[in-house]
Structure formats: structure tokens, C-alpha cells
Length: 208
Image (cartoon, rainbow, N blue to C red; front, top):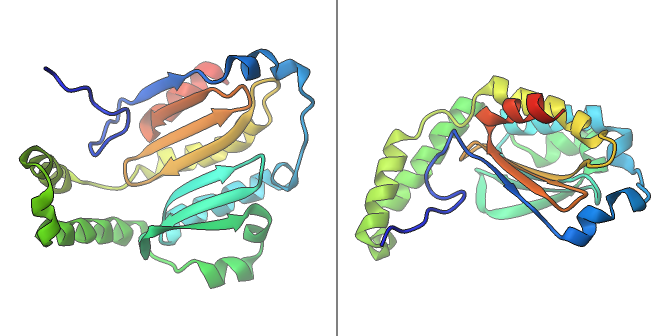
């Protein structure tokens, strides 16, 4: 029996584009709910530049940005199994940024991730994996290239304000992952769009 692939798994998929419908009651009540604005909305352009800086020039490789609750969850190559939680308004402070986020170039961050996975391959625990998983991870790690296309990443961050300012169905949460070059967006209708960085431009051109 052919095994079904995960929507986002250990492999890379530049053609990823998938829509998930959420709670029908939330979808149908979108226009009956009054929208509330917060500190993220008031500073969305500046915050988008900060988030881009974190991904391009610090150890951050994944951001989960809560635009409604102002929570920003971050994963860093310097502490890869941990998830940091920051408030969006704190990220507006240069002193806060300098203290919490160590700088590293995107190219070196990519190489560090490769070295981390190389260590895993050499660890005894790697033998616990099934032969299929071992082979799949070895092949993926060998082919692992640049974390993301910088122009694609810039385009994603530049369009967060537009997606947040939409009338009706607006952006509620966005997850940007450099490692597998995916972006996942949840909207106030409870629907989710998951796609590769490469396909984000097509999504914007089609729906915005």
C-alpha cells in the first residue's frame, strides 16, 4: 500500500500550495464580528521590517507571528529545540533586539543547520530510525541547499501589512519557516493557506 505523504514533512516541496477550511461557523460569521485593532496594526510596517531582519540576519529560522494576540514565537539555530516567546511591541525596541538576538549571516545559518543534521547522522540514536527514514534523511540532508530565496522572503514580509489590512478575510497568524521554505497563514475566517515561499507570490497575485 502506498503511504500518504505528510502535507509538510521531512522533504522539501517548492510546489506546495494547499488550503484548509476551518470552522464553518467562524467562516459564516466573519462579517458579523467587529474587528479590533492592536499595537501590531499600529506598527505593522515597522514590525514587518523587524521580522525580516530577524530571519535574514539573526539565528531565527522560524517565526510564528500572532497578529491578533501580539505573540511572536521564535526558533533559533543557537537553541534549536527551544521556542522563544516575545511580545510584538518589545520587538520595536532596538535595545531589546540587540540583547535577545545574536547576529549570523543567512549563508552561515544555512551551513550551521547542515552541520547540526550531520551530527545527528553520526549519533547512535540515528540507528533507531527505520532504514527508510535513515535513507530519506540522508538524501535530504545531502541535497539541502540555500534556506530560502531572499527575494521571495522579502516579498512575503512586504505583503504581511496588505494581508492584515484586507477587508473581511484578513490575516490572523502567519508562520514563516526558513528550513523547509514554507509559509502558513491563518485568517479570521479560520481558514489556513500553506505554501512554499516560491508559491507565495502566485497566491498574492491571484487573491490580493
